Each structure stands twice: as C-alpha cells, then as structure tokens.
Image (tube, rainbow, N blue to C red; front, side):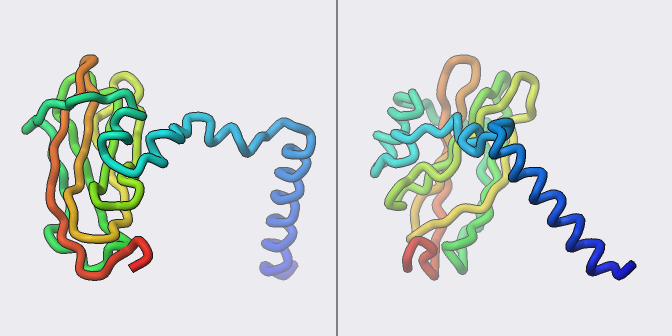
Length: 155
C-alpha cells in the first residue's frame, strides 16, 4: 500500500472520529477555554489587569528571576522564562507593560509544581516585562526591561 494513501486514510479517520465526538456532544471545544479570565486579558493597563486577576500591590521579590533578551530584534517573538524560588507558588502571570493589552500569559500551578514557565510573547515596543507570582496567599513581582527594535503588535 502506498505510504501517502495510508497517511491520508489515517488522517481522515481521525478527523471523522473527532467530528462524530463533537456532534454527539462528547467533546466540547468551549471547555478548553473555561478558565479564560476575560476582564484581566482585555484590560488596557497593568493595574486593571492585576485587579482582574485578584492581585493588589504585589511586593518586589528577588526570588523571582526573569530571563529575557536585553534587546529583542523582533517584538513578534520574544522568549521569556520566569522562575519562582518562592515556596508554595500557585500562579505566575506575565505582563508586557506597554502592550495594548498588557497581560500576555497567566498560569495556574498545581500543588508541588515547580515555579517555572517558559513562553514566547509579543511586544509592540520597548517596555518592562513584569512577572507577578502568587505564593503562600501573597503576591510578589519582578520586572526586566526589554528593548524592541522591530514591533510585534502591528508595528
């Protein structure tokens, strides 16, 4: 049997199975977005986004490390790593302060999970990348400036 034909048949069978599951109500695409925090992600400034996350006046912490380039050649793809050495870290949020919508990522961490996330974000211009970590019922923050040479958010 031709390998291309075999791959096409496998793909069609898989797509058909998913379509039947969706039609039967066994698989609901909206369930994946159940944790979407619309007010926080649509906020137009950092203060409102933090308020939407339930964070107020986070304390500065040296136990949060942000690894990001000093100069990002392309703001459309800026690699960012956040490591929290705070005991009991339950969430990590990442903000690009001058973006039109500054909250770019929010992660909830299950008990015992290492306080580490790695992602790529879009930045429209040079700004602070801020991490807000919740640990032990309190909020902590750290920031790092990233200079952008080519804008990623429409620039």
